[in-house]
Length: 191
Image (cartoon, rainbow, N blue to C red; front, side, top):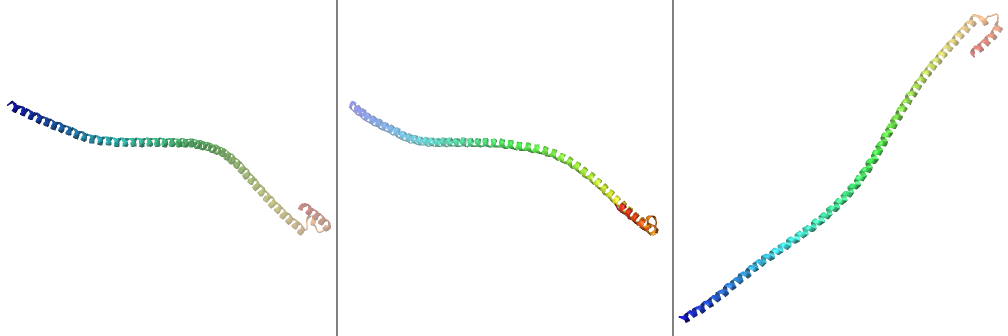
């Protein structure tokens, strides 16, 4: 029975050893498979991390370039704005000077126009007075001419009457003497 027990013990040791090896081998296999699966998952995660890092780097570069572009563009716009503001100030100053000059010219022209209007009224008054005087002078001349013609007609009529009736210097008895006097009188009256 001891020998049988020894055999069983030996058999149990062998069985236990085999089972231990199997368990150890199985555990190692599971660990290996777990490591392999974990390694594969880790590798995928590392690749994903690398892709994301590359994308972050690319986005950072794009962001830096965009920021640089926008800063440069903003700087150019600020320069243009400054140029336009200076031009605006110059133009406004020039226009203000032009406006001031126009106002001054307007005031000067208005004053000159008022002076010219006054001179015109004065000249017009002089012209009107001159026309009135000329009209008076013309009427006076016409009156004098009318009176002169009337006087000449009356004198002619009177002389004719004297001659026809033989009165005054034209009496029939004194022909020679009367004619000389008559001629003399006629000459003096014609003057």
